[in-house]
Length: 393
Image (cartoon, rainbow, N blue to C red; front, side):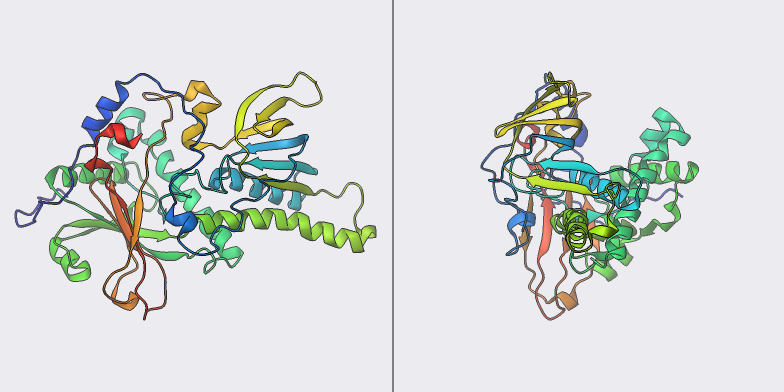
């Protein structure tokens, strides 16, 4: 059903609207630029410094000797790298693979470089219809549905891991809804096309997306814009990554402890994982090994590690070691992320739990959990459209 944007809605917001296409066109016209190593002295991030003790692994292994050789070397301690180690540990635990030695290398503090998890973000939402009109037009419905499907799978698996381990409180998980405010008629028309394409392609969960009128939004949230709403979550990403790493390494520690007291229960064939993390260990190069006993030489500022497998989990910095991924048109480019944490004038009990998105995703905000009698932190992110695109990369 097509909807008309209400004439009564005030659209004079203090940000530039719908500038993404123009900025992107100017951006892709630039020559590919290979990423450098992350800056050694970055600004402080709310997610890594916003609470005392929130990053207990910050300098883990930074002054410990690095191993000479491993089976798997993971470059990057963001959620991708830590998840890789976690699932390798689970494979060993289940007997699906033999004993392995794994190392995670990080250029700065633990998780400090993962822009969407260590230095920004917090949303845990599977987007049901974003970009679906363009995806269906370009790839057809059978391929297009794979994009929201992988998001749904990722969210459901993270929630499953958190709940199976009883980490809900430890990672500040909030189960809520995501509200997309619509600022003007072009946005409304684009969202309508995306939702129609998602329905036509039979995207799982698309019926959970509901339209809210201006009157409904004003009554529930106090602002005068129409909106779309769907199930969502938010959490503290660093706390999740910390738990995943500790769980993976804890399997090793507990098995070693038991083995020292009950060696008869452990035969030489019993599998285990030797997992180590070395922060402040930038990787400067990866090349085929000349020694023959391992496949690759991973060169770092603290020495060389020989490994059979190398996992590049460096996100926006991937082209530093793999120049074929240099942007802008078909590569990967670092972009600036920014949030502020601010407190409202009312206690937590007077606010809602929901996540909010606006201006085509460029602005977002949500309250962090705390007792109802306290004033919570509200995470307010975005603002990149208020600056020229050059300042965002």
